[in-house]
Image (cartoon, rainbow over all chains, first blue to last red; front, side):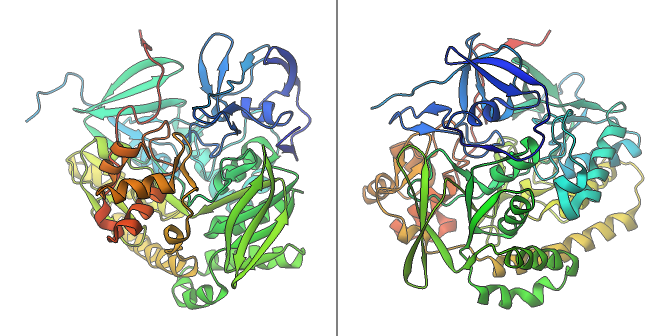
Length: 96
Length: 458
């Protein structure tokens, strides 16, 4: 279930992308974080407990919104704009 | 003396917020063509961060009372960009021997400099509470960015907590944009704000805005609790509610999102890597790079401006950016308007007095460490708890970098940006030492994570 709620700027072209292998959709101008969290409620699992995380600072400082792209790159979802057809994979993290 | 570096003739500014933009404008007006490096997409910093180009909201809708200032800062950057070397989306991850190491679009680069103006800004100052890593919990700055930059609220029913001017501003902006604000929890008591009035009256316009936001919230039926300390965020896999302590009573409320912070903290890693001396600031409760009244750091050729060298806000950042640029120009033998420089220093001193008033109105909760339970996860990167830190102190360690080496607090990907000050508070309390004597987390390159094996620029 969605975490973020869209309040404004809803009239933008839709962009299709792939989230964990499933078709998903965001809007032009969304960050990856917005595109994922307006439909889902987490971005990654913690590296030590596997607990869900959904970012925290939204300004590129906390490093808690990393997602993996189809080309293997790890990026901060808060500061990466959504592009059409991008493959976004959420990493489940690990439990110690 | 260092060996001279070829082509090291550049004047570089790091950070395109209000300080960096005004500095660039001032340098250009005196015939210098600075290089302006910024991690952001479109400049403006965090406070005047711009929405993506295809968004349509007006400056008034985004920045409220600050719309004219935001527009002016953006217009200045737009006018300058053709005449300066503007490099957006570029991370500076190291600085040494008069060279900056950068990363842009996956490619590594270097920018040699002769003179450097550091305007790296701030992030939220966080005092963690149990449950703060749950999805749906964000910093106050993050809540504002979600709205300003993406047109989103962080949830359906939002609680805003902590202290500082941003608390009321975000609450007002959220409610005004149609978000449901379940409550505002201000840890500072009403009496503190009354006590601060004399100092706050020095900047009547800013004070009036604060009072306006506060009364607007009350007039619109939004519950504002003062002297209310956020105690815990509840939830299993996401937020389901909050509890807080107020006047000896425990209260709770259902919600699906929480944003909290206690004012701001300076981003000082770059100044640290540059070898700047630091001094303790009681007002900021932090070690900050030393600067003289004109913006010079302790390192020749390195200047400091804006919140990155002590929290004073966006208006002060504009003034300090211009001032530091004038000082730089004067130091390299350019003719400058000395009266303007004196006037800027006078205005900055007045804002500094107001800043002291704000600290009285929104006091730092000095008892936070004493109340933090052992199970509280302080470091969200490495999952180090308050109990882990206290155990390390019990083993005889009290200097923050030693504590970091022993239990890994502050060693994760954020390099202590989120947990560093909280860890310091716990170490000081557990070791019975003064907060200043515990030390500060040293900056380490790369100051933000960079991918291994990045390609060099062609």
